[in-house]
Image (tube, rainbow, N blue to C red; front, side):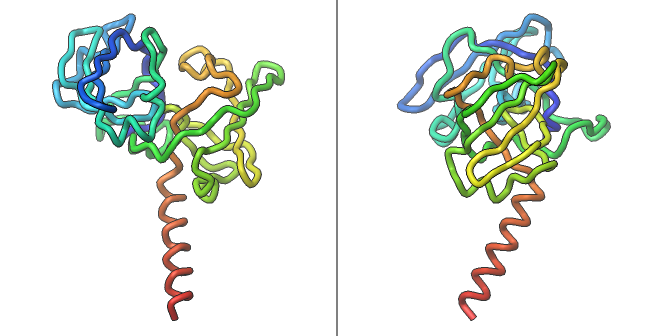
Length: 206
């Protein structure tokens, strides 16, 4: 489990195609981020939970399977691209963000970027329209691994705001219109959407 609080921004320093839609990623950091991590440990990269298969103090290798390739922005990665990193949460850690599984629900496209004072407002359209049922104003959302609060929604898009700290310590400051991000909706919203679906199905079948 993760919290959506980015601990470091690394970069993709190697991309090795192993089979069709299967990759090995090498991620490098400026500091010794991977020192406390173990081989086999989980690291969240841009919202995707991946397993360390080899590492040094500043680099780590990860294998990406076809389902992850098909449903996340991993398919768009290029060399030197910045990525948000977070280690799995310890039971003794502070819970500063929200419950994040690292299991991406889908991608979203940036449809608008605007600045108001020091805040940057970003609007996204999920590639799967049904995800909007799990996104509500003042609710939590994970955008490429970053825990954020939804400011507003309409039928097809949601908007978040980025304060200077988030802009300085994540890769979200690189986003422009047309770019894609990974999104994970709030786990509570998932259960509520599931309950509503089950209630509808039971009523329809009665």
